[in-house]
Image (cartoon, rainbow, N blue to C red; front, side):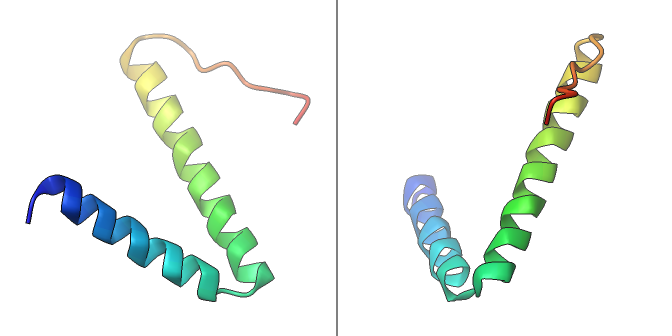
Length: 58
């Protein structure tokens, strides 16, 4: 299986699992994904030698 097909399969599986969650489960999953995205942003910024910019409004 090619990488593109594997990725498509994984995305379809994640989508099915996400849709099977209740409202609170979906909100929790989205919160985890947002936290991971922010952590990745911070790690990349620290590797570049730049302090991450924070949004105090949100």
